[in-house]
Length: 166
Image 1 (spheres, rainbow, N blue to C red):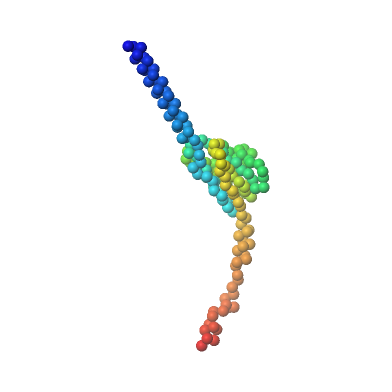
Image 2: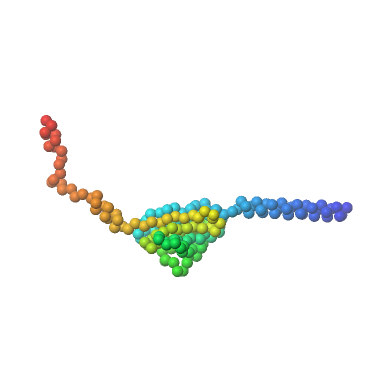
């Protein structure tokens, strides 16, 4: 009788362990990491502040890379909150929530234009955003083309047309 009791308990223990393993396998497959928020293409003025937001569904650190405009190689910027020591002082990481890593570029310099990639190390499809920069003198040049000097004395107030119509 005692042997039957031990045999049933052993069988129950094996079944419970099998169920636990199945649950763990299911949880592992359903807990795959993915990006919930991806960085967006940005156009900024030279010297402005740029924020690139990247959010993952787990607390794993995200990695940022930069491919400068005209380059074929990527430069490592950060992993989690750790910034590369040989990179520009313009970079900072804000991590307000679990899984959220905002790359702050302040001030943005012309040498920092390019493609920024956010990677959670499980991504099959890369998540990237382009940062394009405009110089402030572009706006001054365009503004000069559209500003017309108007002399108040030379203005035609339209009264001549009314008088000639009578």
